[in-house]
Image 1 (cartoon, rainbow, N blue to C red):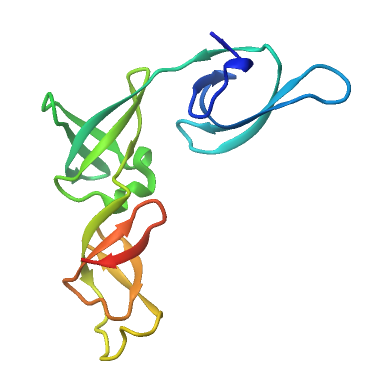
Image 2 (image 1 turned 60 degrees about the vertical axis):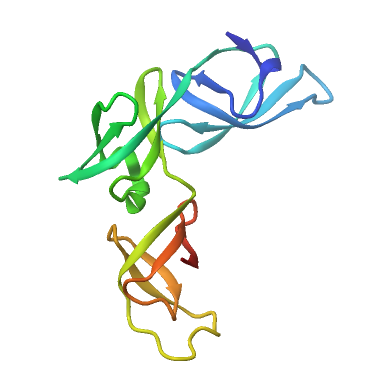
Length: 185
């Protein structure tokens, strides 16, 4: 159990029987009454952020988060299969749990699986991933100067906005946080 005085960014706590991570906090002393702690909390399973205010001295249960390296193997139906790189144990994860990260999963990609009290709650993909363009309208000579974009399809089937000079078969780098093109490889 920890108190509000022990709060720090990145701390995982249980609030109203739900797992949260502290994103931001501020100790506030109003002119009248006791001190309070203003906190922004990110839900560890759903991802939403809420703002809460707690009285100084309130107690919370801490949660343990662990990370394991896994390798993406293949997709079967709506499930994605991963292998633990240390034990070679395989685990199947539903598309619903992965969210939009499925747009960046290609065979043999190493990811980090995030476990909350031994329950898989999500994955983290590398921030920059190299992908191949499978569909794109052909570019026209001289298109490398302008900053206009077009829609192209990645090898995973996801659509991305790319500059006009990118063509089918090109390898590009994609920022997985924003889903944007960064550069051609």
